[in-house]
Image 1 (cartoon, rainbow, N blue to C red):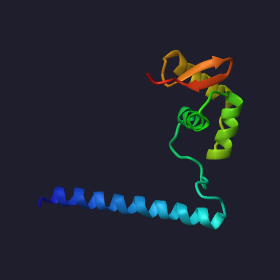
Image 2 (cartoon, rainbow, N blue to C red):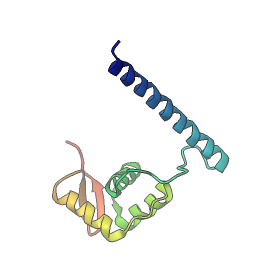
Image 3 (spheres, helix red, strand yellow):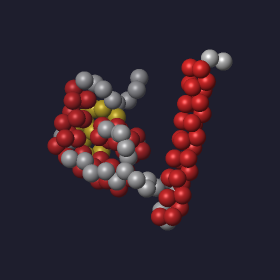
Length: 114
């Protein structure tokens, strides 16, 4: 086995261990906090406002007013979202027919897949 292959294998193993330890640490923190199973202990990292809105709409299974989306993002993901920023981002997605549709003023839904 060449040195670069050994290094790649080593990096893969260490990444798997790191991912496992990260999951274990989150579980311990959740247990220590007394929060129920599935509760988010820390802020979502690396997810855009649009991704958070998509998650909320998917969980809801129905259209929601932007204020309800923002409230649920704050409650579930512990992230504060600026209303105008979210409306702007979702409106751009609607205009591009990308994932979202507007069903009423400031009411958004996920597009129905065909």
